[in-house]
Amino acid sequence: MADRKEILEVAGHEVAISNPGKIFFPRTGHTKLDLVRYYLSVADGAMAGVAGRPMVLKRFVNGAEGEAFFQKRAPESRPPWIDTVELRFPSGRSAVEVVPRDAATLVWAVNLGCIDLNPHPVRADDLEHPDELRVDLDPVPGVEWPQIVAVALVAQAVLADFGLTGWPKTSGSRGFHVYARIERRWDFAQVRRAAVALAREVERRAPDLATAKWWKEERHGVFVDYNQNAKDRTVASAYSVRPTPDARVSTPLTWDEVADCRPEAFTVDTVPERYAQLGDPWRGMDEAAGSLETLLALAERDEAAGLPDAPWPPHYDKQAGEPPRVQPSKRRSAGPPPADATTASGTGDTASPAPGNPGGPAARTGQPARRQAAGIQPAGRRRSTMPLIEVARAAAKDEAMAGLDRWKERHADVWPYLQPADVLVDSMRGRSSTWTRIRLNLRHVPEAERPPQEELDVDYDPWARGGGRPGG
Image (cartoon, rainbow, N blue to C red):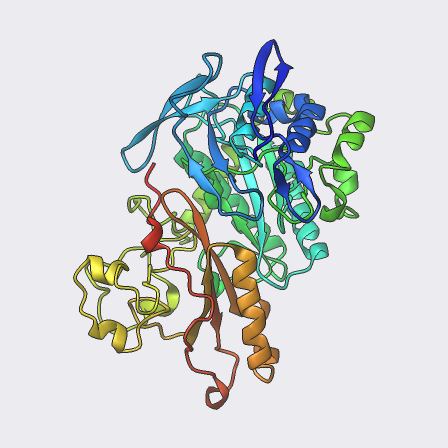
């Protein structure tokens, strides 16, 4: 039987918490009410990251280990004090999104199943001019934490050299975030252009540690994800709890703390005490807004030197100056891509049906079944010159990683050949939920020892559950 509702008085509003004893983090035992109490304990810091910004609702109605779905549109049955604003997306669609104004909105969102907070980098009073440049450091599998913080320190130096102040925080997951407050003078395309220039400069200064390469097959070390600055992209904000087994928090730091920090030290249990003792390390950020002019000048120099624009996320229209939106290994393939080929993930990889899935893209577009029989699935509809095989596809990342572990056990003699960049873990985003695909690039495995594509033992079918490209 569901717990009774609990009514909290927050910021002058009554907020109902339904089923407050519901377990949100099974491995730690934290409940929905525990999560509410956490956000109230750091409310000023959390609000500094989301106040006045449109926010996507990422809902975990079955807790942190359940499947999440993205809800851009504010629920119609919401309290009258919940503020909203209408956003328009690159797809041409629009949505009325929630705009937090006080801690009551945070508690209301948690009651809906929101664990982390995902605001846009704009204020509701000017939706076309971001006030944040976001540096998202995303390590390839196998990269250790010291390398990630080393790249963060390089990013700090680059920002400082180009007139911007960096504000660091753990992501609460495997990566690291550095924000820079900017003047609201540039549109999304210009902010992203500055982010591309910054990412390339970080790569130039630390070529063995960092990469600005968009395609996963070309990456190594820590990827500086410039595309998080494209319109309609959101990042977990400061003090967001993340859906990790130990309930980690995306925690703001001082730069003196970065080199020795450990992400596992910041959880819903430890951050409130830290906040009470130290306050918010990001206080003063709004007074440190800087200019993008010097980074944009660097972008012009890169362009004059022959560097084209970097690839955009796949659901955006082709941009002027953008290189072909095709994986490097596929550019060398014979013949043009099929006219109906579409891209589906943040890596620009080609959408592919699950093995034997009659509802996949091939079936929807009338592609003959012989294409699947020809060995083109499950890695994609176009054959790659890279020796890629697919290992797992699952609704949850942990389940996909478990499938990878079983593959490693079956091919213990092959695994030592693989380098970290050869393990391609793709977070695939559908219209309202995410799923995980894992592929392996066998380029470093001697050809005679390469295992063939096997039937997947973790074989999630995203299309059968309404998956698809994000569309606003």
